Length: 244
Ligand code: BV8
Ligand code: ZN
Image (cartoon, rainbow, N blue to C red; front, top):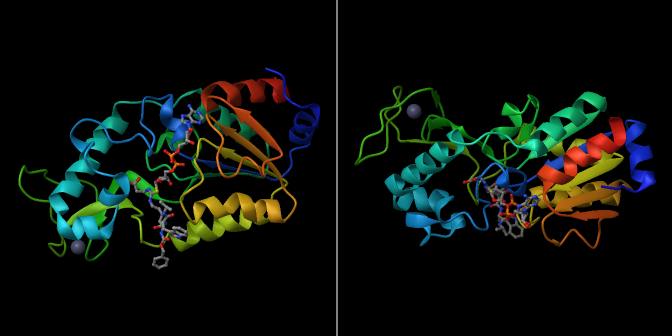
């Protein structure tokens, strides 16, 4: 695959780089994206309706089981070449910040230990009352497992719609986006806020915007470069073109 010389030369100079990823980067690992997440018994629910404090208040067991189902789906897959290529980029670029909207933990598994998980991590569980993390719990068919400290219901350590993002992670992502020279937006439809503002924060300060996505998004008209296709194919090609 050919890449514009200007982009390759820029990457060789090891500029400050931010990469924001979404569900599309995990699609080639066999995980459904958010927009086409609902299959089988969950098909009758909109993701946004299950991923909210209101849904948990209304039917905690339904929401708990949905996350248990997704947790098993994540356990059954492995990172793909796109995840590994981003981990490789971090080895070549001194100031590389990887930010993800994904809760699947696949970036960590691919060797990106300092990935900023803006929306949490589905493998982690905490108490919905006292906030204490639980490393293990007893799943039973009728009720949501309880916190061993206060007896409150356990919940996934993810950010639900209507809930604020964790401040340290959000601030770190905004700061990095405001000073980067190159901003990659990869496998995200760019509709969920405030994550979708990061590319614009970078663009407003003159950064070069590179979008890699299977289809155009609201960001495409702003991007300096748009590579349409699969991130698990394009990212390894880019790494090869620049550093190998
Ligand atoms: C908040 C965790 C306030 C849970 C998630 C302003 C305007 C409008 C609405 C809002 C606004 N501000 C806030 C809102 C509301 C809301 C929001 O943005 N709604 C959207 C739907 C309009 N935002 C919130 O509620 C946020 N909280 O605002 O709190 C507040 C503040 C202070 C105090 C109190 C309250 C919280 C947002 C986070 C929600 N949690 N996930 C869980 O996972 O269960 S969001 C979840 O959905 C994911 O994490 C991800 O962020 C998002 C899905 O988006 P993508 O990752 O982009 O995935 P998608 O499927 O959409 O697209 C995939 C793309 O990949 C596609 O384009 C496809 O073409 C492409 N693709 C597919 N395969 C490939 C590929 N590309 C490359 N290669 C491939 N192989
Ligand atoms: Zn508790």
